[in-house]
Image 1: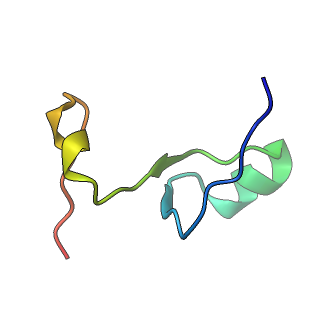
Image 2 (image 1 turned 30 degrees about the vertical axis):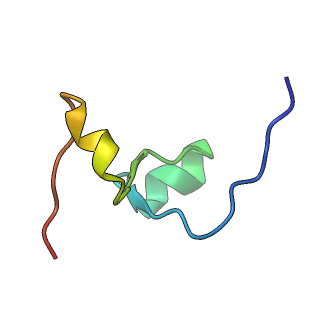
Length: 49
C-alpha cells in the first residue's frame, strides 16, 4: 500500500524535548484536529484557545 500526501496544514503538538529528538531521530507528539467527529473517541483531549 502506498502512502498519500495530505493537503492543507495538519498541526502536531511535539511533546519530546529537542535534545531527545536529535539523539534518537524520533519525535513524540500528538496530532491535533478541529474535526468534531473525532470527539467521540475516549482518548480525545479538548484544548481551548
